[in-house]
Length: 451
Image (cartoon, rainbow, N blue to C red; front, side, top):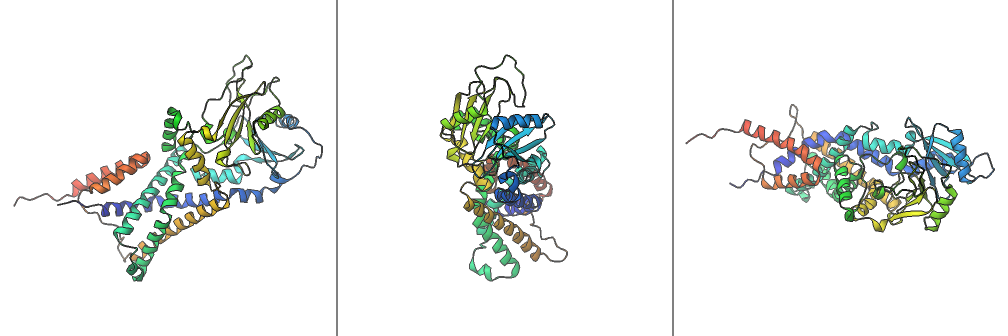
C-alpha cells in the first residue's frame, strides 16, 4: 500500500513547534516592530543631542574638537567620527578599556552639545533585545536563529495544511466559530507567507550558525561576495563599516612607525594626518555626507571612510548603491584602496539589499509600513491559531494531534530534508525529532501475527 503519511507529521510538528517557539516569536516580532521606527523615535527622544547647539559660539576645527575630547576624556580613545548631513550634528564615538562606549555630539561650530551612553540608546537597546534578549549570550542567539528556522517550517507546513484541509473553501466560512478562526489563521498565513520568509531570510547576517557559515563560504569564494556576516549585530568601532567589507584585511599605511603594537584602540601619532585632510581627500573621491571615519587601530593601520546602508545609526544610512569603503594612509592621507557596491559579489549585494529591507529602511517609509503590516498580520495569525485551538477543546481533553503509528511519507521526509539543508541548525534539531519519532514508532508498533 502506498504510504501517504504527510499530513499527520506536518500537523503535529506544526502544533508543537507553535507551542514551543511562539513566546520567542512574539518577542522577536514585537522588538522588530520597535526597531523598525527607531529613527522616528530617536529624532523625537534626542532632539538636543541630534539637533541642538552648544552655548559656546566660538567656531573650532574638527581636529581641535577631537583634541578637546582627548583632554576632557583622558581614559577614552577616539574610535570613529560620523560626519552627518544637515540638520544632524556630527557624532564622535569614544570608548575605554572597560568597554564603555559613549557618543559625543558636535554642533556646526564643532563644540560639544551632549553625550550619550551607547548601551542605553533606543536603537542599540532594541537591536540587542531583538538579537539576544539583552543578554549578549551566544546560546540565546542560537535560540533566536532556531526560532527563525522553525518559523519558516510553520509557514511551509501551514500553507500545505491550508490546501490539504481546504480551509479556503467558501463553505468553511459558514461553519462554526472554531473553524472560522482556523480559516482566518490560514488566510493570514497565506497572505504573509512570502514577505515573512523574505524578512526571516534577510535576518541571516545576524545569525550565529548559518550566518557564520555563509561568511566563511563567501570569503573563500571572493567572486561571490567576500561579505562579512559576523556573529553579532553591528557594534562598537566597526558599526558604520558596510557588511560587505567589514572582515576584509585593511591595507597598511606605507610610512608606519617602527613599533608594532597590536591594539584595538585608535592609535594617535604626532605624524598622523589631520582629519581635515582626510575629509578633503574623501570629498575629492566624491564621498559625500553622511559618512564615517574610523580611526586606525594600530600604527600600520589606515583611516577607513565608509558609507553604509545598514549602520543602525539614525541619519547615517544610505542607499545600497551608494555604499563605499575607502582606505586612506594615516600619515600621507592618500587614498590606498576603495571598494564600492559594484565590486561586491552576489552574496555581498544580496545582503547589502537584504539587511536594510529587514530593518525597514531600504525604500523609506513604505518599507517600514510593509514590514509593520507583515508583523501585525503574523501576530494576528498566531493569536487566531491558538484561539481556534482553544475553542475546539472539550473539557478534560487537550485536543493534541494524535500520532499515526506508521512511517512518514517520502514527501514529508524530502521536504524536511530540503529545509534542513537550507537551514542547518533546523536540520540538526530535526535529527533529534526524527530519532525520537523512530524510537516511538518501533516501541509502539503492533507485532505482526502469523495467520
